Length: 276
Image 1 (tube, rainbow, N blue to C red):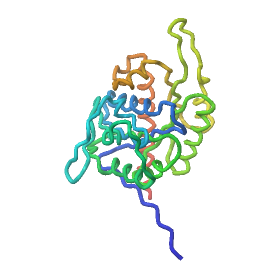
Image 2: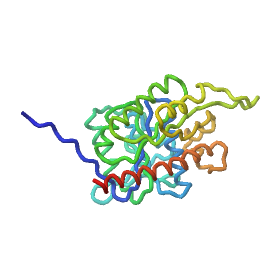
Image 3: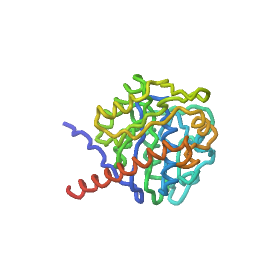
Image 4: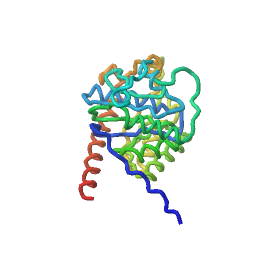
């Protein structure tokens, strides 16, 4: 009787300290917006940061980073990442530009994810953030088989529909033995610019309650502000304005919480490895 194939052991990326996946159970919750602004906030706080666009079918990071360069081929057929706003990024959108859809199956997705992780010249990084595609699928499986993840962040709006899918993302990370470092509530509420009244378009607070239910940290909420959308559309994310900007401040607050949680998780993981 044929023996089942052993799962490949994940291998650390030389020079990369912490790898954090950012996911959501569904599309349209602003996961990439959070990923980009969080990466920039970490950079502004003095860390060396890389950002992988693992949403192969809908790569939006090139637009949000304001870059249309094509990656160069480096030594040994490696890939030189695109540098923008102080951080290193890679996306299939830099390579296959335009509006033509990418049509590929699981094995090809797996190969691209492995290349982005193992063949890109990341150099020394404190944080490598991975913007996952929405849902629960092949890319996450490829990730956990390829590299050891420090942890994951789940992004959701506070609506019940979004939270239902966010809970699936939480369960997915649990199934693949990845610690969830926290939940971010995006599009939490809207402040009317005329009357300054707070409007809870998506029912504010749902993500915080979910975090409490699952016993995981709530990293913070981000207001629904047109300038955040405009910044992403124009390749100038609001986090570039710095922590004193009212629009950017929530991303910096989330980044600072994440730093402490990621450092604790990395230390715990190293203790487990040393014991084994």
